[in-house]
Length: 390
Ligand code: RFL
Ligand code: PHB
Image (cartoon, rainbow, N blue to C red; front, side, top):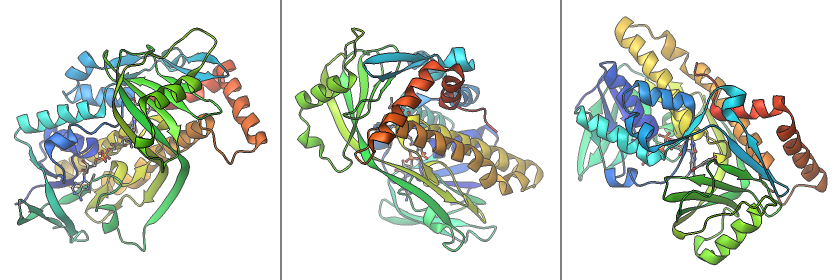
């Protein structure tokens, strides 16, 4: 089989790239190790930047997001028993939308399949070949049969644990990493939203986040030991921990309900450079990871593939590789901004056992400054809603 662009991974990066290329008349095949049902059921991100919403709308797949997603014009920072509103729209003129990543995935898969797009699910043994030549290929197994996909380009959108990054020549590769000593315990709850807007809470017992998924489902997180076991957390213990961290003097109350999913995720910051070699390009989590505090991971994946779609369009319409050659340098500017912001939000809001009393006072001072200075709040808001795309 042959195509113009071979895409490894049907996450948001791979599927959106395939969709954008299709709109430009460029053919692609997406290879995915998991089944359609699995990718459509994996619970991950919730916050979409305005620029991400714009791309989904402009490319014709935003209709359900507009109907079912919720636009948020602000969020709350909670600490010291009080909530303080960060007026995102008042400070930046922009907003965010809460719409689950797996719903974006469903919309993209439906759009690709409706346009006869090719997604090969449940493949294994994916290997990349001849990336230094103009005729790269990917070999894989499907239903026990060996297959070969020949393409002009191979795009690695296979997430942090994928195979594409390791195809980069080790001698040229440089990785930057920070692993945090805490994780997030995430739950899904059958209950209406406790708050119209997200609440990011800093507390000496640890961070907590109140988010939503739909008018019937809440998404809540709290900082935990990354090596903890969900089975050690009964529903009662979870509610008492969340209530302790979200306790406040203004009468606001968390709405409790049936917890129907629990999971723990580790937190890391990671960037691998360069993001390209020969005919191979990496996009999204395959090249970089941020801790979820700043809600940037999916949004970065979208901005990467937007650049790639543009560079590939230029290549196929003019034969020029200049935009593709600049891909790593252009993408990294936004990536490092998001890396810094995500690290900063994480440090601002989490409680570290290693923090000295001095560092705790600094953290509190910074929170006080953000909620009392328009300039400081604007810096936070501008990064949170997302800087303009390159
Ligand atoms: P993905 O989503 O990991 O998709 C990669 C796909 O590749 C497949 N795959 C392979 N396919 C073929 N061959 C192989 N060898 C393969 N190996 C793997 C995988 O099965 C998978 O389907 O990467 P992508 O597309 O780069 O997208 C990145 C985002 O998923 C990620 O950054 C976000 O989920 C991060 N994130 C958030 N981002 C936001 O922008 N806003 C948020 O509010 C937000 N909240 C979150 C988050 C991530 C979280 N977790 C679970 C890490 C909240 C959480 C809890
Ligand atoms: C989510 O709703 O899953 C969510 C919201 C905000 C974040 C991370 C995740 O910072």
